[in-house]
Image 1 (cartoon, rainbow, N blue to C red):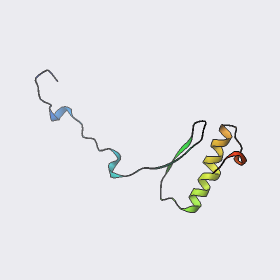
Image 2: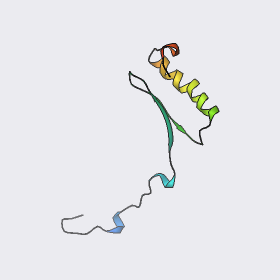
Image 3: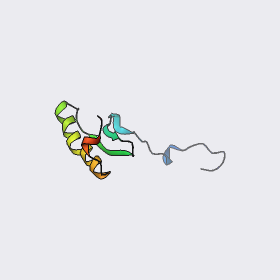
Image 4: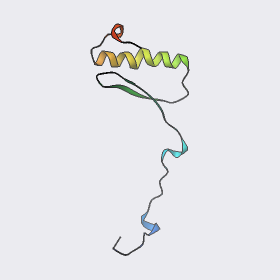
Length: 73
């Protein structure tokens, strides 16, 4: 657009962020840094939380060469 001209709808693109949805994520933080970040597609229940701890949390500890026995949870 040139100085003094108003915006022209012809050159604008309508955008809708997140399409009205919400995003649910899980991530752990440890004293060294942050851990793995995962997106949870559906709701979080006890079974899924335990699965996340067994997978993502333990993978984070392994990445930083930490032992689960050394972690206070």
